[in-house]
Image (cartoon, rainbow, N blue to C red; front, side):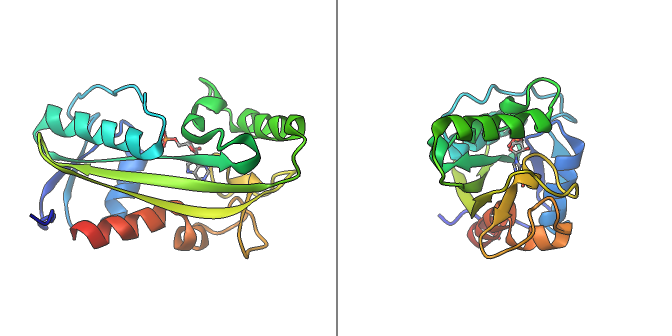
Length: 199
Ligand code: IMP
């Protein structure tokens, strides 16, 4: 059976972050009624998997089974080739409890220096999972490749954006207008794949 989302379906977005829920709803073109895991008082499962897809699926599955609604979850982060893919699924955790990304970016630079490698290759990954309550699930990943850039530049983005220059571009994600970043980002690529799969 093909998994298709009917227009008007009620979806729970497995996040307690209203900004993220709005962003995900906008990408879905307002075709669905969106509620958040926070709205429904659902807990936040611990992200215990070793892959982006594993964590996205774990979050979508938990929200779908607890709510009885189709659930959408994401997991994303920065991977550095010379650091064997770190920070990877630990991208948010490297910023510590205060979500201090200046600290997280310093850590990337320090670990890279310590590695002795001159390979600046890095990539962002976004995994999206859509799970049906006690039913099947679809998981997709989008990726954008690029190079680490020190010192970081730009304050238009968030997270690790200032230290990442996508392949073929001069500007870092932190210097790009949101629309330019959205046209090539890991998140946009994951959503294109998800739409192709379920819309
Ligand atoms: P999540 O919310 O658990 O998926 O955590 C994602 C982590 O990766 C956050 O710490 C983000 O700052 C970082 N991250 C994900 N996507 C991006 C991006 O597009 N730019 C910069 N940082 C990102």
